[in-house]
Length: 202
Image 1 (cartoon, rainbow, N blue to C red):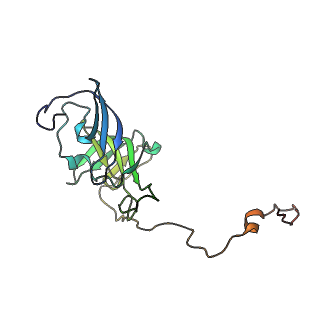
Image 2: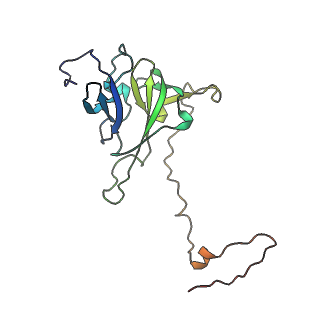
């Protein structure tokens, strides 16, 4: 709050309510402070939920920068409130509880050429966690091992050989047929049912 010149070790209550996604930067969050100030574009390392949370380098909190300026924020219902181990860039593991997901895409199809990496060659999203040590982390799928006592067993302790799937799955470039009005208006019939096969057009 003082451009890193003072205020170290001091805290203020913050209501974090928005996120900004700028390419080649970490996600930047907006917070309303209890003194009435709305502070914008703060990195996630600026926030903690325990006053004695250890101070980590920024690359510990966030594994990747933003992949595009277009972002969707939602809670994955299947992962809601789940705990997981996050594996940092040094290979150390940190436990935390899932909060929400930042999911990047490229939405400006007509205005600007897609020259980023949000969808190709691979897709990344940032799962945001409330960490046990009092900090918040944003990590991708391939650096997280989830926990679910009612479902998951034999949790991973190393990569079993999984590789990134670079295939683009599509069906509309696989067929060479054509469509016409008959294709759109002629429907099949149930067994034992008859119908007039005549097509009427104005």
